[in-house]
Length: 220
Image 1 (cartoon, rainbow, N blue to C red):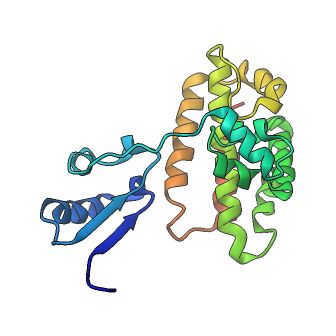
Image 2 (cartoon, helix red, strand yellow):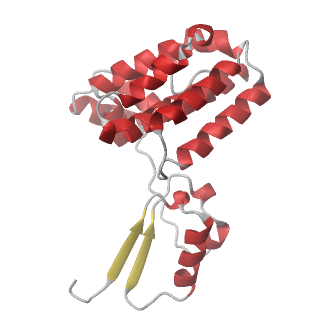
Image 3 (cartoon, helix red, strand yellow):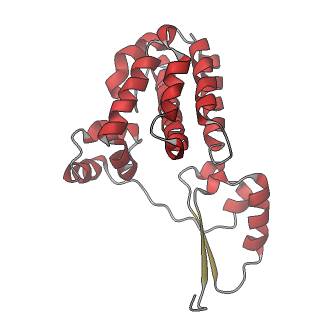
């Protein structure tokens, strides 16, 4: 506003569709004077190579687990290790996940996911509508994140490794990992990632939840 520079922040950069990336590419090739474009991504592998090749890369590494645990403890988080596991080591995300209401809802979903033969799809999906219309998309995002982490841990255990994001649900994960077909699990996990990428578009959150839960139950 003082006519010294123009700064644009694009975050998360990996969410750009092909049209947006192509339009940005033209600006990157011939940027106007005094213009700074900052692309933020925690998944740079999903940013088009043509974009990455024209950017200066500045890494922002995660803090050490010890530093993250100490910071979370100072914020009043009672179980910092579990919060960090859910957030894949990212402390700010872990702080948000440590909210008591979010933790209670996660426990409810994981209990349901741990017993797919008893999972009531409509009842679980209806919880997306709880809390008001403005919260539905956020609740769907949360549920998809739990499903993505859950299926990733299923794949890890099936491959002989330990659960990474749900260490508090090791027993049901081990039981289910012995029953699920790996290829079907990988395809389902990929479908969740595609659905996660569509959250910025118009959608009916509860219907999306019903669809992904029906597909989940069909895995077993």
